Length: 329
Length: 302
Image (cartoon, rainbow over all chains, first blue to last red; front, side):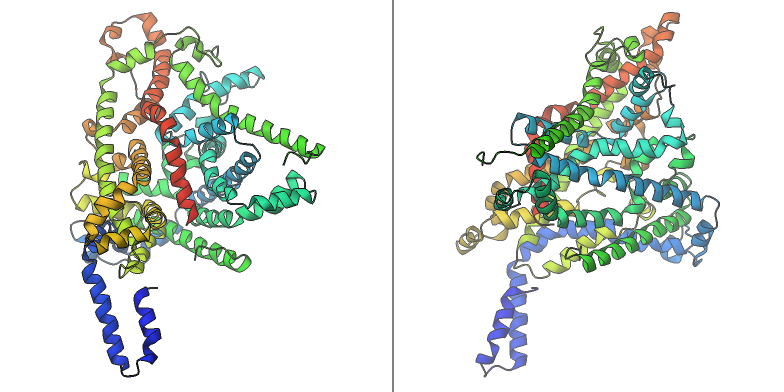
């Protein structure tokens, strides 16, 4: 579909036997050029975005070269000396390597397992409620936490979980539980991170499923009802299959960013005492790269993270394409 | 529809669903109400866990302290400025590009789409991006906050889909037959018809800029330029707060006041949370349908 206009002219070509192939091609090129000439303004429209993506997304891709070099800012990316895979080897053999991997995958899988199904369940439940004040109020309120900034969100977590003054510990106190210092205890970090994320994101995440459910043909439900299907059966056999393409696409996307979830929030929640369970690859890259200015090393670590992500994305997409009709590409 | 009587299991299931949603509602609503109540309650009662839902011992100390806290207001002003500038740049980049990409006649459309979408999956990552911004001399300037976030491919696709779906082909054809150029077409016909999506874009980008802290964390080191979120980070997360610096009158060594200091800083936090989220809280009920519409448009065509 590169040039829709021209395909028709080449289909008709045999009718005009007087024209040679060369002529046709030349004509094709002429119409293309004419199209470009008449729509030059559209290219002007595209220019800012083109420059933006070129400079701020493609130049950093070139900058990845420093992962294989001993980057010296004075020499620049190209003239810095090559060191091969030295930084990668350094990282793989470092003592914190397995801790970082364990935390990164642990937090990702935990939030995937807990967080991924929640919006789906919520959307299915929403769908069972007839339109009314309750439904509209419910939607308004479940979307709201999405707009709370990460800083405020983490501020709320810290306030609510404070061992002396926090709400959660006051509630636990009612049941005779000793105060827990959630933020300082490495054992609690992942749970706090994941469940606060569910609290903040589940309503917003449900919107896309609600949209998909609104596209379900009501006749399917009517005829299933006539056949005596229960609500649960209708959800199972009509609603869930209708959601499946959306579920698969979002699942693939989530898997593709498995190793980089929630980095900004983790960074805010991190402190010296919970470090052993909160430090992930992305926060490590921030610390070594931005704070300690070890540019080459941290770029190599970041590249490792990105390569794993891309590999997972391709594999999951491949599986989805084989097992179902839906896939990203 | 009502002719078919609901079976007993269906009824039980229905009640179960309502209960489930009710529990979710409480879980989400309770912390929000608690913050509002805590911000106007007696800090001592809040900290002792005597305030459960409705404000107790109403006082506005938190807000009073807040008004003396200059940093917050400087941050507020900075954030408003960054958000306005940022959104203007976002719209300037996003809308024309999305319009161009929505035109089937555009030669090389696929090339541009692939080039843009590719960046969704592969990026240089934190350090190369940081070095680029540094090399461009944007460190410690406003530009570091707005230019590297000039557009999002998601939003361009969202806009493009909107233009494709809602602007009738006939209208464009008629206009171009009347000798309307692409530029005129865009400004005189397409944009006026696209107010809903422009609102959605402004809101999506706007919320992004308002809530942004990471760019300022890595690119800004002059505290006078800090946006609101960086000030909040200091107060809420790093807990760097002293009541003395806020209110000189209190610095006069007063044993009682010192004892209350922890309490006060807690109540100040709740007030800070509320004030920083206030614009969102006020605008939210009016804007909600736009937000939802935006997500819905996006979900029609991936």
